[in-house]
Image 1 (cartoon, rainbow, N blue to C red):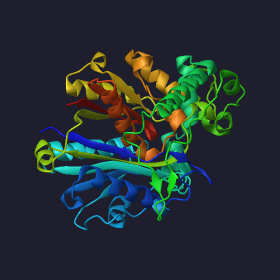
Image 2: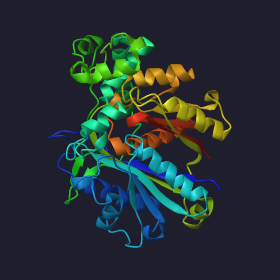
Image 3: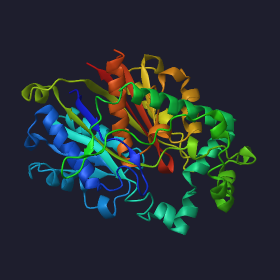
Image 4: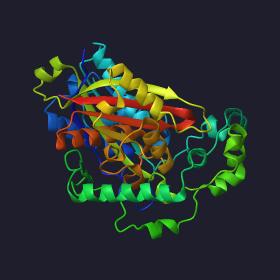
Length: 400
């Protein structure tokens, strides 16, 4: 049984710091606004939703206690609608979509809401104090290093230069700026409003206009200190062939720390017909992968290959790719490993320019991809994510 995508919406992404555009908005409110908008756009009575599956990485404080369910209640949805949150690090939002599709394609559910949320200004990354990074014994045993050190390790192993990293970052901002200026995000974007209905934020605020190669070249390396404090030694212990870690990434070639949320409505054909919904795409396949945890960020390519094989496709059958821009060298590794045309990857910019709201990003990218496929009248797209501890996920969608 096919799982169809009926709608995909998201909030703007606000700078994830004090004073950021969404820093005064609780994560439960980010979700509640999207829940209400999803019901209004589709005309679906929330009481018929079989489940809600949301990604959220740092599930403590305001993001704890099963925010998927609690936010649905807060939004006024029926108390008969179940809900759950999941954590597969940065791939959480995409895995939420994949799990929702699996529920539908198995025949066990008819309509499922998927998505994710992360308020990084209010619930900082790693504030959950997980054993992987907060327990010294576990960190040593598992080879934990900062993700930026892993990105610099990948750049070193692949011979990626500082100039190449800066160039990809500059391209990301230029593409995102053009997309925002041309209104390409308008289809899925839902302004965030306060209790009185006034707009709090209506557009992505991380994008930087007027960036130049000279400005980027003047920035210091962002992860040299983390490397000097033991990260480089761990990386070289696993990969001595690297010789010495070249710290080529800066804050400009790393993903933006932002707040945001996204929702995707997934269901079977019968449910769509019953509720008067128009299918926009179907989920052809999905896959997870894992690699050695020190290099950490290279699993998107094997996950993509696995997902494409399950769909009976090759990389050449895909019109557009959304590969999360965790760091410049990570995207460049993905592009080169799969032999992709850079013009088909992140056509509207990526997380370097737009930001990476951790547990929401996968669902955000799925909506961005679907909008691009519709706008360009193309058929097949892939979303791919890397994640902590060596994890990766990929999803193949096809317009209908």
